[in-house]
Amino acid sequence: MARHRSGDCTEHAVLLTALARSVGFPAKVVFGSVIARNGEQVGAYGHAWAELHRDGRWSIVDATPLGEAMPLSYVPEGLLEDEGPGFMFGFLSSLASGILRIEVLGNTPAPAGP
Image (cartoon, rainbow, N blue to C red):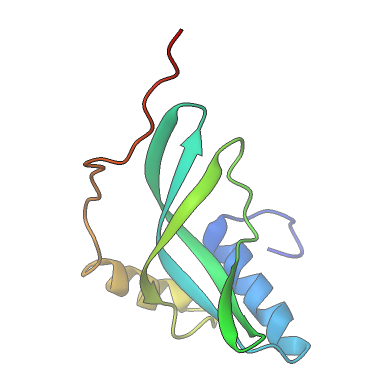
């Protein structure tokens, strides 16, 4: 990813985790869903991000821009246990038992009226 300057959210999260660890921050790759807003639309998307341990707590650090969407919430479903060259095999097996559907039932903002 670093050499080609391209990749998806998983590659970005793995690289960020490796860089954080190289300077002494405990870090992990988390995968799950991100709930994001784009204008009036709210949707959930499969996603991967990094979490860094600092100031006594784990903080989300998302290295992947979501375009114009703004993240509202991250729903973790699992950790990537091995970020080595064969990490996708572990990632795919973890997805098999993950959340299959997220449905928004309420708490969405009402459209602005005149």
